[in-house]
Image 1 (cartoon, rainbow, N blue to C red):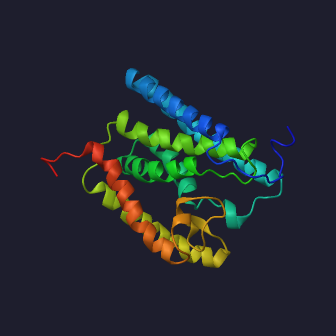
Image 2 (image 1 turned 180 degrees about the vertical axis):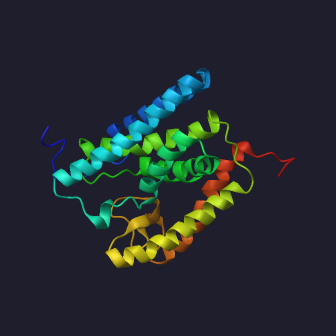
Length: 234
């Protein structure tokens, strides 16, 4: 138990058995939850939305409590300014309110961002550690909620929505960048690449990877829109 909640850093087994099984478990839970939502009446859906939002909140809270308890919590790393951290709070809001703008962000920014984190999670302490399962759980819940938005809540992305999401992402980055300079932080990885393996490893150093990730981002958003494309309307 001490190692599970400890602070000893060990190598992360990327796409190893534990990682792959965990991704599979998230997929199974997501399918079951969406199917339950489709079969439920509004009262049942309300309970499922509440359960999903509470799950995300508890994951977030547990991470902050653990970091505070181990003395690792810091303004430079733990303010909710990373995309997935911000989207976790947007997702909680969207599940409670079902506001169309929140559902749009849940689908485009939530799914696109959190899927990347599922594939390359926070593995600083290895796969047999609390932070690995917290990261898989919280990001998995955000992805599930984004899929819930289009499958259960009947949000249908329009042709403009990928571009709106892309514009909001860039606006958010423009706000976070000076905060990074002020705080000495690296939120959104706008100052340097993350230490662990990510898609950014395929790009050159700062600032070029920021510019080159732009077409990747809009490509992901357009791909998410593709299942809902109506050639006659578009």
